Length: 204
Image (cartoon, rainbow, N blue to C red):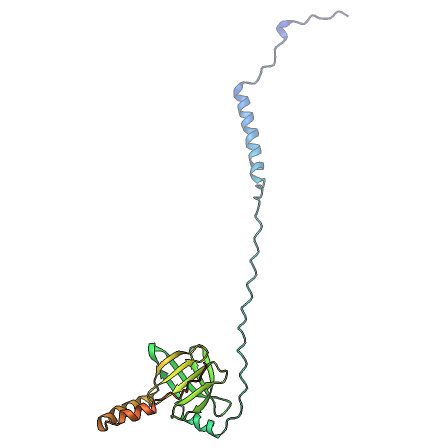
């Protein structure tokens, strides 16, 4: 067979898409991928471990009060001396206060409350008429005279409280002043009643 020659006139090249069409196609592809990107969950940020709260410090235990000293049964002189103690509040120097009361459990003993201390005392009547309240532990001593009372530390030989006055002592002071006016010898009698009843011991 004879082949027909191809005419160049009949061959038409396929036209290339214009640059504008390429841009439109790229835009369409981008628009199609945006929703998928929007639905992609964002990466979770690294979370720091939450620090555990430190356990609360255990509540401090209140120390138990010291045991009460054993008290011997009071004899008749001690019971009589306890009746001589002025019960109630005392106003002392430097705006200090002390409270004296009968022991709630054992007759013949006195409790002296000062600041946060409660001191159990044994009443002893001295030969001068002064009332001595002797600490059963041997640490302190309270002396009650006509016009005032005082608290002493017998270990260091120092006054802890002075010029402690009970309302009954105020009455005695007022009566003594009136007696001085009426009787010049009243002052000497008052000084005799105001003796502390402390006898110095040799070698101490």
